[in-house]
Length: 390
Image 1 (cartoon, rainbow, N blue to C red):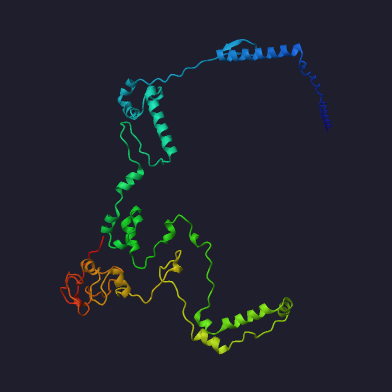
Image 2: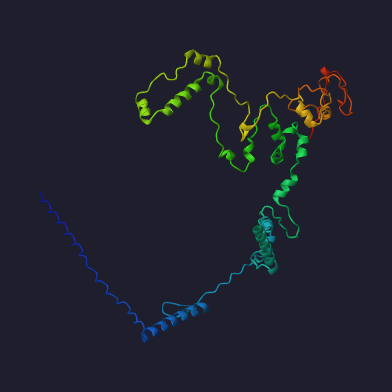
């Protein structure tokens, strides 16, 4: 058998490079400033100023210096916009492009300088607008002027011209009594009046158009003291409490502390049957607000006269209207009611001379104290006109 060949020895690894430390740069000595107050310092300042002036002059002349100090003139570029050849678009293949390019101005007209007259006109317009703003006028109210010198109308004035009047709106709707002054400014006034006159519709609170905050006028007004309901006050609890509070007021501080530590029970003893009857027999339902009855400032100070009824003329009202006392003269509003109908709020109200018989001793006619036009049919089948006051 042949002897096995000896393995070749592995190559020796290359020696690692030894880092060589770079020599430190030689320190540069700073330029020594010339001593102040000497002749050398003044000469050095003059030389520096002369160099600066020379640089400014070269920059003004349009020259620069390269790295070797040679003077190189600055490149001056003049951009000139040149329109394309219009005859090149005569080809039928470019007919569509020609129609599109026709909507644009040529570069000469677009980039050309403005004329002095147009610039002066724009400056004059701007100056007038600034003067109006300084006088306190709003920009919306200013009437713009077009090229022909005709005054244009502002958006606010155009809206006011297209807006219907209150009289026109009352003629269009079924409920003219629900029209208010600001209803004509709505986006759809007729729809707004229809919704306001709808059954069980609740209006917007009246303080929406007030400038001051809600309930701002109630500041500084003392709140009324809370009063017990009448059915509880009848039990006599208020007198019992007042007597016990008077006794506590006469006690000394030491006695009050002793009463707190060891209170005496049963001082306000009320019969249980009295309390039971107060809450289960004599309790009254509190006054609640009706449907759509919203609170507004000063509502609690209004006087509600429950004994007054519409259609009943009191003696005070007769004296205020100048009607003679003890007579059966007709009220002054009867003629208009016969012509336009009963009030919208009381369509079923019985009014003498309108849908009810006149009092005994009264006469129909238009003389002083007369009751107007007599009805054509009986009161049971009386038809009233549907025309309303606008």
